[in-house]
Image (tube, rainbow, N blue to C red):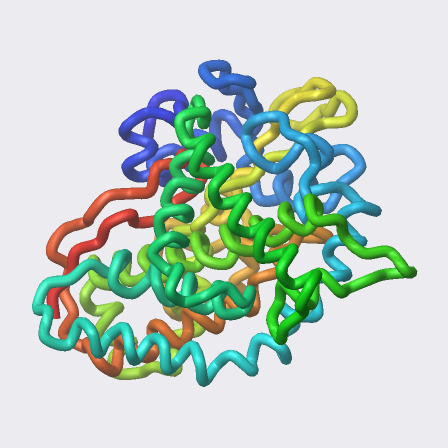
Length: 382
């Protein structure tokens, strides 16, 4: 347990959970000044749940990141959010996503085939990252030959998200934007059987999206469609291999994979928390938040609240009613949740079948943004 709370400290960045008890017991409404802009943090399950559902008070008008930014696509308020989501959601229904199961299985098999004689390899670079990237790239309809470009752009995007000054990555962000904008314009001229074409031609009440609006949505789908799933897979493998009996239990009983996924989402959420901006002064039991403040909804701390979860600091494959908040809640519940769950399920099933003797070489290193949580490097053997 830490004395005080600094989300940028080496201790908290290395293992965010060391701060959860302090937040929950001593600072459920925490104010952090050493960031621009300063922000508040909500950590108790009931407070985070209530705030996520109260979109009138906790607004996405200035983005869901730690800085104030214009509303963008699905990270905006209704009715703008409702319009964007209505155009995208048909591609991400459980039924639509289920059609990708065979292809995801084939990709996971191919990736492990490439590692068959490797001995030592990296769970992130060789498996957890390329799997969801290949899937989202194929869904969007961009050439597979450009996979390395997308790997680079994804890494840069993640670095920029957590940097105090994202300016050093501005050129790369413009390069990604130009690439996606060109793909959008190609689909306007010649629609194909892919997600970008669906978005280009989609309309609601006779209204579609402009190229710039489409760029925002496609960029969100690209980043959200790969980075969080990558972290879900690496986090889950990391924790299970740290506790060998858990891994061996899954090898013996793959029917527990879904339970492992949900417990990993609760215990190690890829997104520690997202932000809202207050539209009025808010009085809570643990403190007050003024109007126009940035507020972090700390999903990860809420997921360890003993008022909501028995034995919250135990990773349990037998947990019942795992009502974690890792995909958000309400109108902003993660659109890609069915895809993330399917990819993680297939990835784990294939990995357990093909690599039952997998071992950690070391704990690797975490990704950069302080409000995200995943392994940027995770060396394994077997």
